[in-house]
View 1: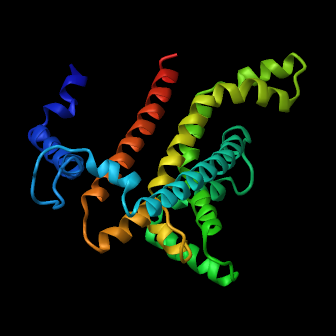
View 2: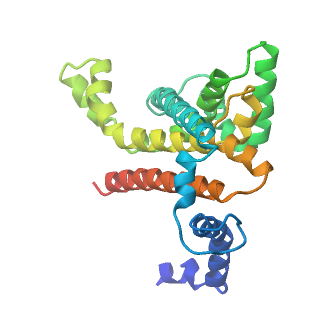
Length: 269
């Protein structure tokens, strides 16, 4: 009975507020998806359903630009997510299994800092850092910036997963004459796999969709998909931009769904 009284769904106004939030969040995405199928050259006039703009993305006059930008986005996201996940795994091991040590709170704060600081501040700070060390901006600066920015996003699911693993497994392995390294690689690491995969996918999505940091640290002539889309939008919104946005949205939804299913299946075990 007490749980029923505390159910937020029974609060006055909960349903209309929920519907309003969902409309504000998802109505623009729905509009973009629908008008990406518009056969018209105009984004305001509806002339029937067609996939011509999806074909235009791959064969149209701007296709080479978007293909190069997509390649940059996916390769940077892949490398940044792998490096960020590796660092996050080591950090989670130190924080969760390392016991109490000097500077533990400070280290945890530094890992979580990118989540609390506005992204524009991170972007400006990163730009200033690269300028101070006279590092030429380009593909590599985007990769370094994305790796640093994605670490806390990978750390959260990995740390949560590790906290749910009883350390008795490792102690039992060492009681059976396994070294600490063997206990980590053969016992703890496989148990952490769902959290690591979730962190990797989350970091990949964050890197793939990032615009603000990328726009600040990229060099001339280097574009990722978000910055290429932004550059095209400044010249006017075209239907092919909606097609690209829809495909990027769909790809992100697929990755988020995979990450959710992995974490959910792991929690049910």
